[in-house]
Image (cartoon, rainbow, N blue to C red; front, side, top):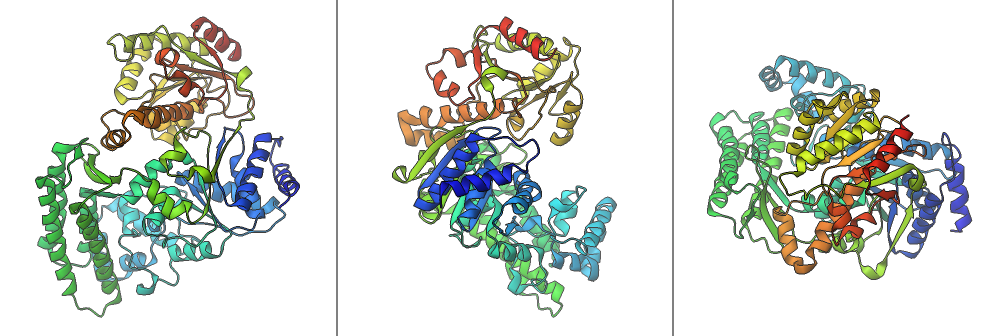
Length: 625
């Protein structure tokens, strides 16, 4: 397709945007995506904040007539595509196309479950076991099931409790499939799959795409192209989805499903108790890598759990009923039991090429078995099957190697950002502060924060690499500055961002969860601080195993790219539009002194750099006057 056709179509679409402006990086990205689809070469695109990367990849993909699967890192981005980007594109792109959103089954209300809780005696008993407030929610959800067009929980204008939603939905582990369900025909999840099968563009989250890869490619419709948005998280998400995760919650969930059909409290309780026994076996190993085969205590807990699930299966097989609702409860319990048993069998077996470890904390430990290298799985499931476009505002330097992209079949480009970072933003490294590992470091950080916040008049997002550091800083600064200090402990994320945005003199102290996915344009946010370079934990069991596999290359392949990417993500909270101005202050002197400092700095936007606080204070006073 001629480059002029792509350019003209993109210009026509972007001209319809409010405050439309020319974005050279977006045009460069669109041309590169078109070339990738024509040549069959994979493409990795670093597209800085403000590039408009969504239209940059969607316009050429649609014009080329390809069946496109877009994998997003979060459901929030998936919902943004559904409610904003794709409807806008469909309205303004001259070439007509169909699009669909496809989520995991548990995101859709299950009409069979609604029928069961509404109509049967068992459903009435089930409702009576729920708290009164949850019963009200379930009734409200059941009424909504009769009016919704999609059955997608994201369509609700209120937030049901987990217990209420679980009462009217099913997981993919539980559902026997449309062909075996009397409500398979009107099923919302199946309707979403049918729309996806015929659509030109299908949006899924990366977790679901990972499950598709792990299943051998049977979960999602056939497609020509996969576009991975927020691709910096691809390796971690794929590690989660192609591996095994077993915790006590899996047994509690199965117990709930069994209790809906089995009138055998002892058998159901034994399954739930198996989860408790597994948790007790896992607790001594929290945060540790496990041997292969697994330690005897964990293996024994899994073997006993498997036997108890097998006993429950025998009880299920003994049920002979002509009542359709009961048949469905039985079938779902059998399906969920089988899938958990399959994972237990995999866990008990050999783990060559994988590493087993215990994640979570003492209250909710989880057995995880993850691949040491996701590359082979991705080569087989994606790179050898589809043309792939990977994009993010920040692309780790080692991404292509870490995810196994064929080096002779991939192009990597950086289209930059349209924002004037050189004049509007400043990067400050507090090089005079003590080593982050010293006892004097926290107090020195607090002094630095107090001075910078005073210069900015509040307007600060202070980010920390640990909850302990955040709490200590909040306590110290509340006693020293007149500004209101919110912390991540105060409110849910959305409400917290809203309150901070509404108070220009306030400060928000938060941890890694706010390094990305937070959008606060304007004067409300003029200063972003980061206490330490966000290196991954040295004792992380999965990364430790990967470091051992890489040897001397590990620090450059794992630790530096991860720290650089996280710091760049945090830095990206500052400049959200063309008129934003502000400072990113890094309290860790290693950014200015360590031998690897340029590997990190070059991953950041091209801001002016300084080591002098007086220069920073003057800049902050000027832009917030």
